[in-house]
Image 1: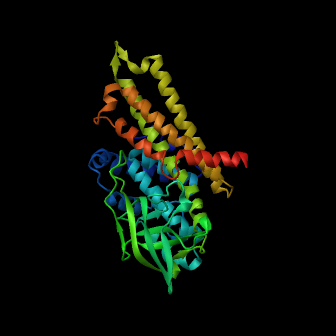
Image 2: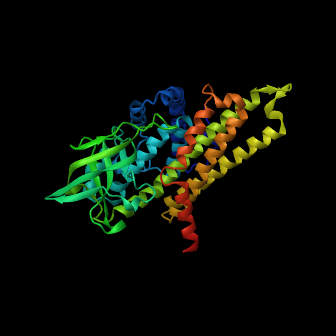
Image 3: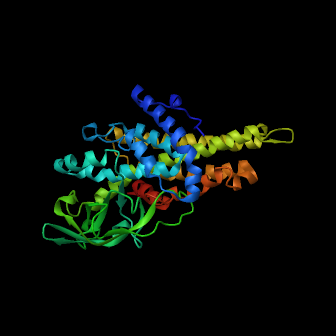
Length: 385
């Protein structure tokens, strides 16, 4: 189902951006939406879909053209991401995570590292993963224990990373490792090939929703990494990780808005068609008020993530704004998808209609890229420091 907000209704900075959003909508309608329900039911990963998006240049939108990127403003990239997630959330998450995985090299790599790896990362033929969380250190990321020991001209990595999107299928991994015991200042970022000897993955997690999105633990057993795979400086990894998450949280906010919009569209269409007591249920004021609140929340969430993106595009501080957008948009997605189930009544509770899947999928968005409790900590500390 197409989103009710068409590309023509969006406030976009250029005609090129409008054309891009129309292309994204066409691909979403033709390639994503028809496959989503079956793939989510069966938990089938969609590497071929990512290849299609890569060929269309949609896996590299916010990165420089000189390295093969689309060089689009973040406000445009996020609206493209919203369109993808509205058709199939798992795909939106994958695109967001791949952009996150390209961030360390693009923003902290040397010129040599950028020239060597970014064209490959942005080619559309590969996908990346971002490895920060561990089984015992999710929100407390600074407590990670995966260790990289110096080994001649490089490092040997041992440890386990958890909740890794693309775990086991990624072509490259950004791995946050401990290179000293100096708390957050002892963390570094290493780039590891997906086929590196000693790197393996556990079976995919059995999740409530977004089942087609591959999520698995990544195990590193004495994985050797050359010294030139260190991104940034030793001890800079935690700063890199937090900066990447600022951008990644906006990606999740956009995905949440796409999902919420899809739920709103489904509920609205149903309310126009379903008849009770001799008329469409959408004619009852109680239903109209419910849909009005849903629509207002979706538009407010979109406005919030776009405001943060525009600050980023202008080189302004946006970390707290990203936390607000992620917090609000994902809470909205949970509320709107729940309300959509209510609009459909019994039909909303069965798999024949997509809103029960939307509701299950919305929950994870309140957890990934920092739980919403963490977002509140970020915002609260900014207010009181």
